[in-house]
Structure formats: C-alpha cells, structure tokens
Image 1 (cartoon, rainbow, N blue to C red):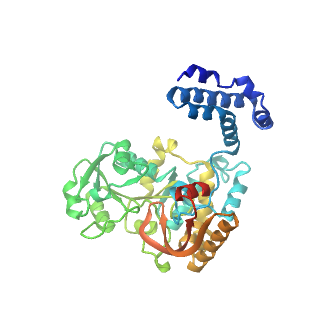
Image 2: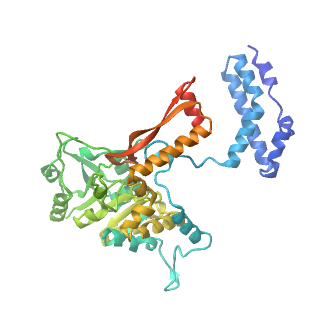
Length: 426
C-alpha cells in the first residue's frame, strides 16, 4: 500500500475554500475560522491515512472530506447544546440537564437579565453589596435556617464547609455513607481536597452511636452525616439518626454537617411517594450546617445550597474558596425565581416542572404517551407502536426506591435492528 499516493489525493486547502458549498458559510462565519476548520479536517485525514491500511476505507474518507467540513461548520453554527425530548422515563435525568424551568420562570429571569442588575450593589444604602444577599433571606424563610449561602454545586458546598470547619482536623463519617456522587466523584476524594482528615466508623450496613463516640478525639473538627439519596441499604442494617448525632455534637463541642444530596423543601408523602427528609426537618433537628442541590428535587438551576448557623456560614463567606466557588447572576436569578414559588407550597407542585411531573396524574401521563405515539406514527417510523403501562423513576440521585405509576411508548421495529431505530430516533 503506497500511502504517498493516498496523501496526494488529499484536496488542497485553496481548492476546498473555493467550493461553493464552503463559500456559502461566508455570510455567517469569518473566513479565518472556516480556514481553521478546513485545516483541522485535512490534518485529521492525514492521521487517518497514516493509521489505516484499508485503501477502500481511506478513499471513502477522502471522498467525504468536503461533507465532513460542512458538517463541522454546521455544528459550529448550530452549537452543541440542543433541546431534546426526554423519552427515558427518568424525570431528573443528569445527562439531559436535570430539572427544567417553566416558561413563566424563564420569562421572569429574562426580564432581570436583559439589563444591568444590583448583583453586588445595595440599593438602600447606595454602597457595595453582597451577592449572597440575593437569595439568602428567601432561603432562610423556607428552611427555617439562621443563614444561607450559594456555591456552584453540592460537592463544592461540602468542600467549602469542611475546608472552613475541619481543615487539618478529623471528620467522622459512617462507612455506609461514603457515597459516589456521579461521574466517578466520591465523598472521600472531595473530603481529601478540602483538607479534612476522614475518619471512617462502623460498617457498610451497620453504624451505631457508640462508633462515633469511640472515634472522637482532640483533633475532631466535624461529624458528617451523608443522606444516601442516590441508593438505599435495606435488610440487615442500622444507622444513627440526626437527633442523636446533633446531641453528641453539642455535648462534645463538635460541629455536625448533613449532606442531603438531592434535597427537598416539600414532603412527597401526601402524593403516595415515600418520605424524603426535608431541609427544614434537618434544621429543626439541630444540624449545624446542611447542604443540598439546587437542580434536583428543588427544581432549579445547578447550585450548592448551604443553610445553617449564622456564625458558621459567616466564616464560610470569608473563606477564600468562596470566591472560586461562587455563582453568577444567571444562577442567582433562576434560583430566586424558583424559591419565590415555594412561598405557597401548593403553587410549587403546579409551577415547578420537576415537582409537577413527579406528582402528575397517571391519566395525564397516558395522554402524553398517546401524543408521542401519534407523533412517531405521523413521522413514518416503520414499527409496531403502542402505549403500555409502566413505572418511572425520579432520577438525579433522588428517591432511589420510589417508582411512579406511568405509561410508556413501546416500539417494535420492523425489518431492522433495534440499534438502527435508536440511532434514527436520536
């Protein structure tokens, strides 16, 4: 195989730039960027020739050079983030952006952000303000906490708390709560980055109060309770309640932290869904600092919410990490709009899409499934399609054992493989 002959088949840059299909992009993309894309594709083609020994496959790739460049240019124009239809049966789907915002919430956010805002300006005094104050009073009101602050996600919230309260000190955690939080990120590794020293107690399935008591030392800074919101241990198991840990922390002058993970401000039990501890319950039971996510059960943007004792959160606000982990005006605007809805709990279940979907009437789900079925039929999907009873999951590391009675669209492809249909649907 003479690869030099193949290299000579590669079209020249100038030739490609003169082609009409490429020049059509001039109206929206500067020539310098088109040139960069062309050169990147030709370099990738050279590498492909170097690594491939099948002449026919190489020639196919060379023949497709212009098409690949056009595909790349279209991709740049259209952007990578696209709106999709969630047909997975999982409501808070991490890969699909977790919780979504309603049109009403989005419109309110838009009105705040199309101009300048008082992000760090106090309109009462006319002096510099703090972005922490944007949602702090609302968050305190709906959780009953003394103080609050926001960082960019829940892992960041845990890291900031430990770095502030337990730097170079020990943090006691049950072995059954050393969870992986997704994307191969794990609580022990987050703790290590914070500068806290992990002390594991108990076993995977059983941890008693006496385990925590024996682990206490002069160097203990905090006890951390991690709510297992993304999995459940059932059967021969035992764990220590937060009231007992709060009492232990107070008696030993050790701070108690609870990472609620997904976190919720409302009780789902009236809707037939197993009870998930609310943030307010944790605050009322004496936890010093509680963390939870903004984009899961809360139904807002990605954020790490920290609530608890004022003197502790004041220390976190002064930590240099707070600057690195802070959120921007887009996140604060969205979070404020979502939190305002919680002031009337019955409105939350109607106006926050995540809560509305979790508690949606089964027949309404059936109607939506029928609409999806009709859409597929009208678009000529060559398959047997029908609506069947099913169960959905909440997802996003939330309520792992809760199953929601639902309906699904069942598709049986005709004369082709399932993988081919799946690709076509995508």
